[in-house]
Every structure is written in C-alpha cells, then in structure tokens.
Amino acid sequence: MSRRTALLAALTTAAALLPTAPSHAEPASTPTLRFGACPDSVPAPPAPDAVECGRITVPLDRHHPEGPSVDVAVSRVPASGSPAERRGILLVNPGGPGGSGLPYAVTKRAKLPERVRRAYDVIGFDPRGVGQSTPVHCGSMGGLFDSPGADPIPVGPVAERSYLASLRNMADDCAAAAGDVLPYLSTEQTAYDMDAIRAALGESRTSFLGVSYGSYLGSAYAARFPHRVGHMVLDSVVGPWDWYDFDVIQSRALLRARDTFFAWTAAHQQRFALGADAESVRRAYLRVREGLTARPVAGFGPAEFDRAVYRALGRTERWAGLADGLRTYLRRGTPDALRPATAFDSAASRNYEAANRVVKCADGPAPNARRILTDIRRTRRLEPQPVLTGMEASACAYWHHRPAHRTRLGSPYAPPVLLVASAHDPVTPIEGARALRGLLPGSRLVTLDDDYSHGVFASRSNTCVDDTVAAYLVDGAVPVTDVHCAGAGLPAVQ
Image (cartoon, rainbow, N blue to C red; front, side, top):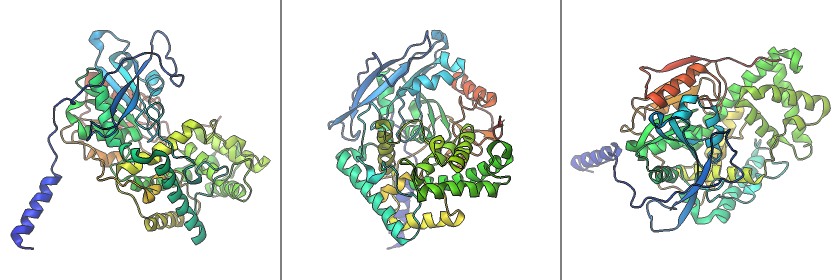
C-alpha cells in the first residue's frame, strides 16, 4: 500500500469515527396511541391518580418500515400538578433486558418525590419482546427451566462440554421458537420505539428514567435521538461494554459483595449462628451448596441456590433472609427459606429469561467457546464456587443471527445527563457509570457512598440523592460537579 493510499484509508476511518449530527426530521408517519383500560398486570395507583393503557404499532425493522410490524404496550399516569407545573413526559424503564415496564409507571411513580409526580406524566412501556409487547419465548432454553437445574459452575472437561452444549441448545431453542424476529428485538430497535411513543403523545422531547438495563436503553436513545432528549436520569448504570464483558465484570463484583456479606453475617453471629468470622460463614455457605449439589431437595439444587444468592446479593435488605435461609438448611435440611416467592418457570419468568438473551445477543459481538471457558476458569481461580447466574450473554456464542454492528451509546449532542450509582453495587458496578460518562459530555455522576445495593433514586430513601435528581428533573438544575451522598452503610440487624 502506498503512503497516499494509507493516508486516505486512515482519513476515511477517522471520519467514520466522528459523531454524526442528528437529524431533526419527524418519522415518516406518526403512530396512533389511544388510551383505555389496563391489563390485570398493571396495578391501580392510589386515588385520585389513575392509570390508562394503550398500544402503538411500529415496524419490526425501523430500517424497512414497509415490512412486518409489532405492537408495543404503553401505560400512562398523568401528572398530578397544575398545567403550569407540568414538564412533559417521563418515560421509565425498570431494567432487564426483559423487565416489564407497563406496571412500572405505577409502582415507580409511587416512590418518586412529589414534585416529580406533579410535573410529569409518567409513561411506562413493555419493550418489544416483553410482556404485552409481542412477547418472545425460547421454549425450554436448553434446559434452563429444568428442576433441579444443572450445576451452573462446570468443573472439569466433561462438565465444561456439557455446559457449552447447554448454551448451544439454548441458542437453538430461541431460533426455533422466535425465528426471524431475533435480530429485531435489539436495544437499538427499542430506542426507535421510544421515539415513536414520544411522537404519538405529541411531545417534542422525552425525559427518561432508566434503571440498570434501562440506563443502557437510555444511552442508546441518546445516541439516536440526542435532540429529542429532555432530562435523562440513568440509575445503576450498565457500562458501555459488550454484554459478555459486562457479565464477566459483574461476576467479579458479586464475589466482592459475597465476601462483604460473609463478614457482615459473622459480625452478627448471635443472630445468625453461622460463624464468628467471615471464613467460618463462607464454610457454612459452601456446606449448604455442596449439600444441595449432592442431594437436591424438591427440585432445589445448586442452580436454584445460586439464583437465590444472586438475587439476595443485589439488595442488602435481603441479606438477613439469605443468612436465615442458610441457617435453616443446615439445621433442618430444608431450602424453603431460600425459595423465591414466584416460580422460576412461570410464564413471566420464561418471557424474561428469553428476552434477556435475545436482546443481549442482538446488541453486539459474542464471545467464543474458548473465551467462555477461559473466563470461568479464571473466575474459579479467584473463588472455586463463584456466582455465574448473570452470565446470560454466554449463549450468544451459538446465536443464529449475529448483529451487523454494536449498539451505539451516548452522544456529544445530548444535553447533560444525570448518572446515579451506588458505590458498591454488585449488579451494575460503579465503573460502568464512570465509563459511560465519557460518552455523555457535560453529564454528572451522583454517587451514594457506603451503599451496597442495586437501584438508588427513589429506592434507597436517601434525601441527598432524591433531592438532587428531583431538582434536575423539575428545575433543570445540573450540579456544578459530581455529587457524593452519604449512604446508610450495611443493614442493622434486629
């Protein structure tokens, strides 16, 4: 290659990496949205507030609007304040991928500061593939719903081959059940749906509150429609990484959180009686897992145990229940105190687990089998019995429809965004918020220090966080610099 040719190639590559100015054109056609009664899954808000639901029809593929379409279900709780107080719409998403947002407009709104409730129509929606919005299913998902499930931590060549086979079977099941829609259940396509909701409501801008995966969805919307962003709050932020990389980072953060849980439990030896130091509690924990691996009880084995641990580690208010469950098993041989209230193989859970994999695999690059096994072995060197429940993107190694490009996140054209994070959140580690901030110039990070839980704004009852975010949403007050709020620390024990 000549120097001139190399220079032209370099300039072409550099130009491709530059941000593209957003288009201000409206969609070719505005979808119709009429509100009426809601399905039973949506709770009624306290009087005098009311919730109403409707649906819009959008193209399956936004790049080919003349093709097939899908329905997206929408809910709305109108602002309770005067017309002068109204600030527009606040679209909300609870996370996932796979979380149903239709009832979230009611449940999250009830926790919002009053001035936010008075200022905004809170809009919930089920993302495409979820709940009431053309739900996706993947059959048995490679045995994911077997009871008891296979041990999710493969040890040795035979177990590793079986583990990879289950991932391949999961991908095959999704391809057989969902077929050609798989590439179009991506975060990017959902971002287009969000803008269709905005247009159908007759709003010029969308304000947005996204938690966990909702932060990824919000940053994808900002990438596509920065000129349509009003005020955006991204809480418990997923970093701007490929999904598999995020899953690995999360698995290491869960180990740190579990060590903290062991030490906390030991500090309350009189209450839990699992050991007077962290190592003793760890050995008690391993005895429970080993016992359930050797002899599952009524369909509850190591896979079910790890799911219970994963859920508990994400919120410190669940730690006492986890410790009680460990003690009860060691004393009585029953895991009932560890069982979730809702069956894992319920219809809602099956849809959630399918949508989770489908969206992750539609969003960007996949790992290969060698890397998956290498990362599991590395994690096991840190801790022989890790928690790998959140490694959903591993199935993408065998996916039938590989995405053409990675989902774009953030934009230099977006207005200042507020990022919110717990300092020790094991589900979405704070380094994700710090990394995403670089893609959203002018954004600010609100950190809840000395906190170990997932979900912060209007969730942790922290006045500093809630007042800061409310002032941003209602008054447009962007903090001069990053904000640190004092957390409550580890939970007290009765």
